[in-house]
Length: 150
Image (cartoon, rainbow, N blue to C red; front, side, top):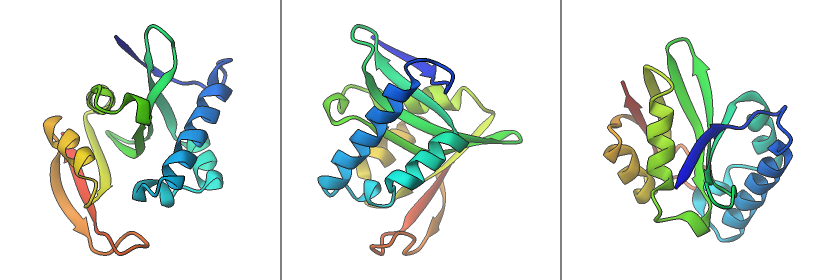
């Protein structure tokens, strides 16, 4: 069982969540996961402060399994970052995050590395459609694919 919740900076466990997120991104960066290379700790902290942070926690342990950063603009929302902790991959956490986010807004947009096949499959399973492409968008020359739902 998973719970989806907004993580508010006024809540006592927010610092733990942010530390978990920073640690997870650092592990992903160390493992060479391309998506994590563009998120420096400074940039990630700034985005966490500017965007709304939502997470999926294990109902039993309350450990953070995945998170999403959202920015709301008028009638639409944009996912600026979504990630699942390695220990929770393959458990449906990404699907849970994406479907819950889609319920928060009448429309939602995101971009994803063209080589991030698991994320692309999850977005398409959840009704997102590719609407554009940014050639050589990332520092390593990989395209960004733009997705939209609603």
